[in-house]
Image (cartoon, rainbow, N blue to C red; front, side, top):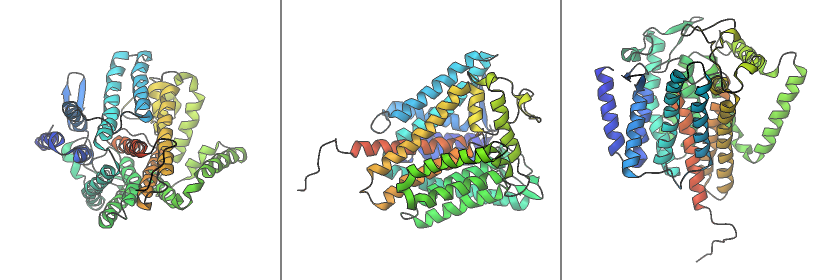
Length: 429
């Protein structure tokens, strides 16, 4: 770890322990935006990135202060525990269970740590709004740095390690990545945060516009088709706010439409991914073929995952002789823990959408801004769900996915706490 990262970590740790509860997520978000995964503290076989160190400090804080998730644990919380339990248990079915277990411990520590810290720190809608405002402010310097990369072809975050100094060029287009490990992930973070910026538009229009401009700058300077498509689906979900009372019909129409495409197309319907190329040089065919190949080799990984996927694809990856490039987060879950882990992850996302629906129904008499906040959280989760088809979160970008899930859970649980028992009426004074 460099002197800069050590100072940053110490200041963030002190802040995480001392600041009021509603500001406690700030150090975690700052670490994901300004620290690369090249800054690591190694203790034996364990690697502690800045985010992991802050998660540990946050856990100490909630133990000392006896802070708990708002209104106790909810169904989504327990589902996260089950996902984590199988992720650890599945390591016993791999060739090197000890090494795999260490890797899974890191994965579970990251996911559960970020999710439950945000659950503990965000108790109500006001906390969620404050967290979104903080996100908007923190993304502005990241977007400016990515713009600088686009112009100078130099990544300033390379001084921290973990990211290259030279900006990648594809088809004469520079691909900025900032502190993230790949331009696609950098652009994805910007895309999935656009609905969050829309959520505070009526409350803090200046901050919302600045945050949205930063998000769009991140998408454009990443020079990748994936973030552009994530942004398109995020905007589509926001547009559907006008027809929010027809969400059930939308789901049914989507399923029927996909099945109809699968019947009329020569290739499976998911091969539509191969035809998407927004900025040029897209690898959509690779992503479609990966899905097909995973289905063909289902017997190898369906139970608890697999240690070898190199034969799934014609091309491999430079960092491993045993694996293909798994550019699909759902399949990545399958490779790690088989169909059980994949289905648990899908169920987690589904549970998040279910909570959005419950919160929308419980807020029918609430101000429009409060209803729109919930819808925007669902739109952000929808953008994540679509993105997972073509992207695997393998760096600090995972934080934004579980941040969204935690905010959704907190709002839903707080709504349940305010909801009157069945059969009880509010009496006018």
